[in-house]
Length: 307
Image (cartoon, rainbow, N blue to C red; front, side, top):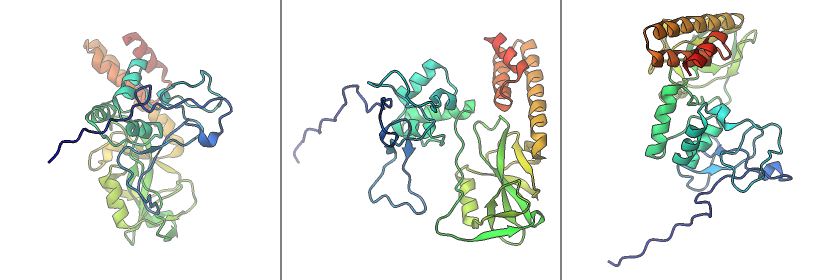
């Protein structure tokens, strides 16, 4: 057996394959203002091994590149949305995130997709995002290209069996989409809640099991009757199922008042923690309340007082 020198790894001048700002005059079809992960799925055949970290740099209006190297200082597109809006971290933490994590992990975050940890550093940031509630939810699979089943019928012929998304740390209220099941069969649907009747693409039971196992859907502990114009407000996530105290099934016009009530209760709990000299708990509660009700004056003021 002979020893062979390992091949020298190619390193770009900047030390990594940094993303560039779109330069003035660059066609949108070739700029790197966003990212898209390439994953195998129904109707997708890659023809090669994609690996865990493959990322296509594809233009999508509204995204800002993660790293600015050798590009112009001005963004020529008016529709950019800062990466910091998607991941609510301070400047130093954002810099550390981009330095520590793999490009595939960062690309998933930029697309609003819950990322797949590929290294130990990815896993540490994944755990932090889970604790702090800024990790994107798993995306539920809405369509199967190999199926053409379609269901239609009155609302009283369906029941709510689950909800999406399975969000963040599970402690911040979020409005999810109800997942319905036909009463007389094991078929599942994601539907328009404002439609006068239920209609949509029917998914098999295997689809439902897969969505729950991947965390893209949270099942209800007990099913409830489906109603038009209603939304599911998840108050607290569960690892396996949502008990009745963990969600509300409300008419759409009652959501705002319910979120306002939750924010007021959170403010009261935060001030109580502050009276007990527990600034850490008060700060956590204030941040959670603001995620539930952004712009709440009392919570914003308390967070400012805490510094």
